[in-house]
Image (cartoon, rainbow, N blue to C red; front, side, top):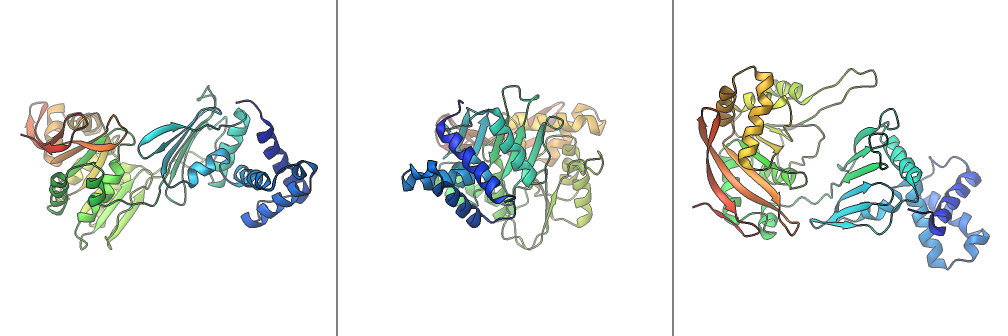
Length: 385
């Protein structure tokens, strides 16, 4: 994106504030806003601008200095659930399940890079040429990920998956068409009856949302341990809840705590149920063993293209660390996972349950399954014939 008088004015004002008042990191937002307004109003540039235009310039300069620049209004909008930056002039966002392109972007790669580096630095995460990839969990539960050149040759890639604070209940999911009332009642009963359940689907299909909603059916007297790579679950109504979160390596390369370690630790905490936010590696074996050793009713999610694909993927993930023949691993998966709920995005952008499948056992290296509910195209989710 080319430089414009508007972006140059914001850069000039930010520089003017820093030059006039020195270090502003310890100045609160209200005081910094007053400093920026005073600097603009007292300049020849500001004198030529209408009052409303001055207010807008001050606010956007604040966003650039303290927030996310042109992304800040998207971050502040509760209807926006994801922000995706594919370089300085390609900003997209998701609202109500649909993707839109933002009409604004960044002046150049440097502006975007500076914003990303500063944003992660405020969260005590280093990112730069030597460490071009970084993840960050924000205080409000939102997650950020960034990739800088050289791994992103077209310019910085920056993604924020927002935690909006809105926790839908099952009634809201039914009303939105996410699933049918009959399927909702079936899943709620399955959780209460301690059926081990897996939620599968692609990125952004609502796996964590459904897991949060299903947790409301767990009896409050049970002890639940959640295990996540990055804490996103917001379980409510569970007084005896333990939350565990994985940790990456420290600067010296040591100190990493993975999901497998956390699952094994959870087994020593006397859990009634274990909930693993997402299974995607060798920890799948530990999760399956936990499900098969007295922790029925455990819940988890994973990435897959269908319910059948999720079962096969679980077996593949557990194969190497188990050292067992594939057929034996298939039997272990079939014994551990009773129900698979697969989620998709419909053509109109809505998230929805595509199918609910019951696992009936294994035959050699294949799973025996029975479809319970299915959706044809964008039609309603109905009980399978």
